[in-house]
Picture 1 (tube, rainbow, N blue to C red):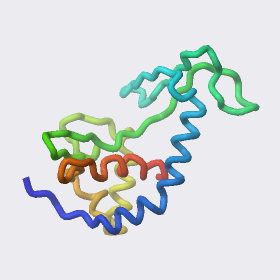
Picture 2: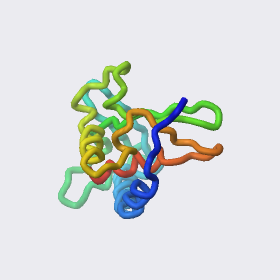
Picture 3: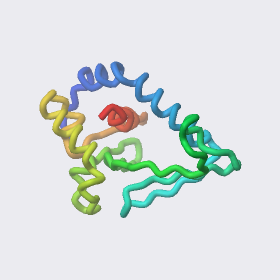
Picture 4: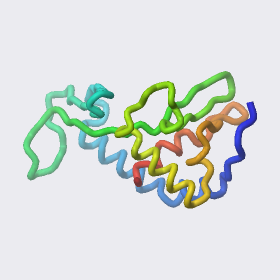
Length: 150
């Protein structure tokens, strides 16, 4: 299969400009839900990801928040990855017509698409892109960090 050419310089620069902020958000979420001491359940109908503490401690939501051992977080589906041998692909949710993903769960992916069109960054506008080259992961992990900024 022939894939579109992705301008890795523009994409890489964007990633490097925002990666620390995205990682900070992920670390804060880990602190709130208790690191490894949790279970999670995804409900695509409601669009909620529910975390439950398994160590008996409350979530670390803040001093003014009521004590709880569960937390519901709204989700957005960005896309999916497929692996095949040394290659693999990323398919954006807005391009995945076979899965019938609810429109309300694709808003972040659509925002990235629109922003990518305006900024001329093909990584956000090409429906299907490769994310492996020469047997190593490329870009799929980066793609899932950037929407934390949307």
